[in-house]
Image (cartoon, rainbow, N blue to C red):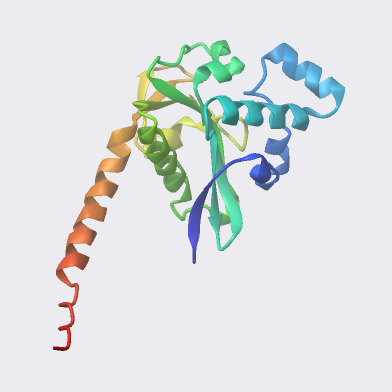
Length: 205
């Protein structure tokens, strides 16, 4: 089984689940989102948002693929790009953090650690951009796929509650903490493989 992470670009937008491909819950404020829905094609607004965010800030989403099939995704960006973020009772997002808006792993791929893989991929991306943390508005009463990530899941992958709420707690994950164990393992493997490297062959005289 081959698993890999792919940064979302305009070319990969159609890899998102259909309901997410045309959803602009996060990308537009409530009034603009309603206007886009009435216009009949919010998918165009989604595409415009991804395009602008890529140009102005960079990668804003990750796909995880299993044997070439998309199994899940996450979206993230600075809160300034996410008008909906100010509507939550536990806002605002901290100034040193990027907002993880939404994510989903398809049911047939659940239980394989893909959600954790996605979060670690986001963290690795953000460390390079010198971002300190990821924050998210969790859904404490999540009962099925929607626009928010279950608070229970966020806690399970290492997020900590920074502002509690009965429904929409704001949670935070320090990005370096998600990578430290992985980097330690990679260093150990490199040392092990280095110690097992064959002696260089002698050159003929």
